[in-house]
Image (cartoon, rainbow, N blue to C red):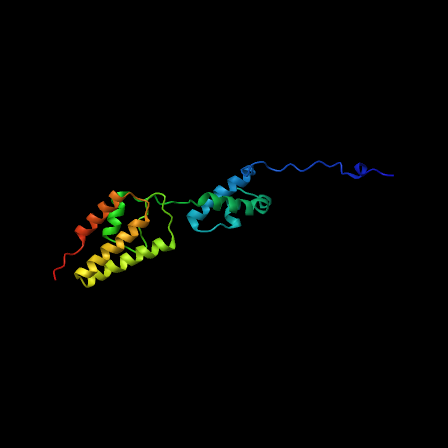
Length: 172
């Protein structure tokens, strides 16, 4: 009777790169060249890579990996910094629906954007038709928005006073 151990393969496991950065040096060079060529001319052709000193074999072997590497190194993720108190006041004084004030630890939720949009709409209506009821509505909607933000009550009052001073004064 044969033992199962006799049928095991004597081959060793393939050696795989341990780090994602274990790419061939020519692949990295090609990626850098691709980035430069794309920045200058807006596209990368095989003829351009040959002119840069790469062989057809290298182009065939590394083209896809180099393109991915070039794209990954070209893209930057930009995060906006959280709004400071001065930014919150400025955004509340000149409200725009696509630029809500977002201090630190604030997630941009649908409810928050709706509340900000209501304030922006009321503020635009006050500019078009200033009357005391509309002014009070603006302040109330701003207060509702600010209550949703993770800021101290004293800071809310500071923003409210600063915005109230810039609202048009209406007489009845």
